[in-house]
Image 1: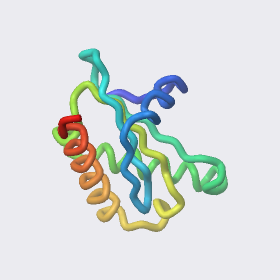
Image 2: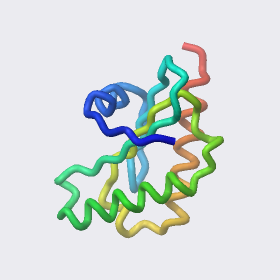
Image 3: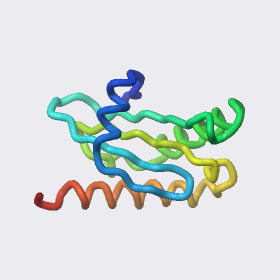
Length: 113
């Protein structure tokens, strides 16, 4: 699994489906290539100080790292937009939130248009 780092990639994912949760918003996008799954993390300055934003990003990275990668769709990009609740939310609950959000995104993308 790779990381998203370029702004253009983040903007492309922002146009895809999104699932909102208390600790984060999950955005996704299917790609047409055979590249690896890529994940990006972002936390806006409205959320808090740099220390708080970095803590949120670290927690989100760890949640993704501990998630079963078979629940991620191949050839896809994901962005997790952190929210302030990620600071105080129980880690196990956040892990369940991510699994649920990935499941909802997968069901949404498998529906016929």
